[in-house]
Image (cartoon, rainbow, N blue to C red; front, side):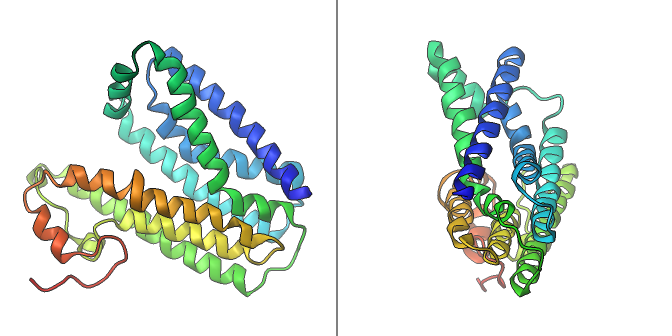
Amino acid sequence: MEIINTFLIAAIIIFCYMTGLFVIALIRKDNSIADIAWGLGFVIVAWATLLIVGSLYPRQILACSLILIWGSRLSIRIFLRNRGRPEDPRYRKWREEWGRFFILRSYLQVFIFQGMILLVNISPVLIINTTSDSNLVFLDVLGLLVWLTGFFFESMGDYQLDTFLKDPKNRGTIMDRGLWHYTRHPNYFGEITMWWGIFIIALSVPYGWIGFIGPLTITLMIVLVSGIPMTERLMAKTPGFEEYRRRTSVLIPWFPNKM
């Protein structure tokens, strides 16, 4: 099946990409490169598979362009945030805990594992790239609108938070302005929404429904694993967070509860 071939090609690209990143991280003694290169990995896989197996149809170009915008923005933002800083505390902690097995576990648990997640997450785009269809339909437009909504929430949420944190007066306080007034995590809501938008576009092609595993995985990881839970554990130390938590929706934007 052509879809299987596309996934195999993507898996090979991801394996080479993650192995290369691991070597760079080993030389630099800094696994934070995995975070910087995360978004860029999606861009490389999307466009490489398009050029190898795709036919440059409008739907394929649309999906890959959305990945280009999202992935480039994410990698640039994390690069600028991490520039000049030491290795992320998570990786420093693992470096100590893993001891003599650090190199092996870094390769498998940081880079190869992220590569596996990348392959699952990008599945809607791989299916789109496999299908030859030159006509855009209603689902393509709907998916694009959903994606644009998500991009607004993620980019605007990040901008508002960055602006808030730059002001020394706000140090040690809770960000509850702008989009953060209606949801505790507008950036996560935006990312989840963008991926469901791409899945809607994938529904326009045969077997596109299989791609639901991508946005579903991203949603579960953000809601239950590494996104919201980790962020809220850090936010819990900030004065006023408990009151903010009680009145503000955790993810889906909504009007604050009256206290």
